[in-house]
Image (cartoon, rainbow, N blue to C red):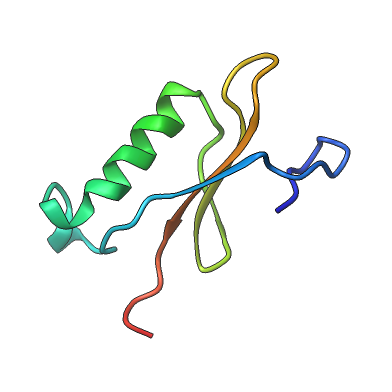
Length: 79
């Protein structure tokens, strides 16, 4: 996975927050992975997730000289 604007450097870490897409699962135990992923995106001040790889992907660094991360929230339903 390559980060845009970073000399095409790969992400050091890929974090995948598992959950069930859809309003009926918000704030339920089925979406703990999504909630943790969103918390990390906010904490690390990553850009708003974009639609990529059949999910929502946020990419950036965890700090000024910290590792490059990619946080993915899969959105595919029962394929």
